[in-house]
Image (cartoon, rainbow, N blue to C red; front, side, top):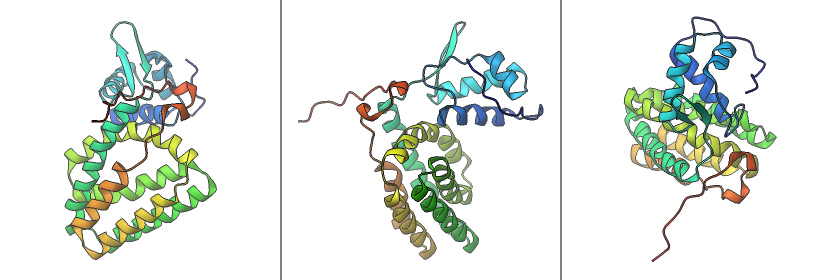
Length: 233
């Protein structure tokens, strides 16, 4: 497994930070689907002991980003379109709940932050900068999640959002994301107006209605596993 050339992080790195670094490396394609992950190599890369790396790999396996074979190997999972659709439904429901629960707590500063994030999102889409677009999108949706103060909700999103993001990186690379910016504007306007029901519905639709990527459109490296949908009728 080639080790990315990046500066080692501080040895006091918390377990959550180790998990976040490894998760992000899988989501952004640094570690490719099918690539074997060795805890010793990863520990060297991050500048930590093997213990937090092993714990992070277990969490990644629970989220479906890696496949672990105890005593043998841990590999980055392929992009399972069925799992992505399932995760998208969970993520959509959590963001709907976050908006609904955050409504009494949202401040003018929060609304301004969401608008600024959407401005950056639209600019990134216009420039074709997928990574910047996803960062801005994360920043926007993180506002109601924080304002909801619901730790269980945040934990569920932390587990399943990366599965959705892997597919979204390809989606933002191949389709026009301007529609997402307009939907963001609608969400922000409704939040500012205090319309919890309508805002929550838009939040749900924003995530749940994302078009799936046909397996034929995925790079070969992603080894997409199509969903076996039942025949109509």
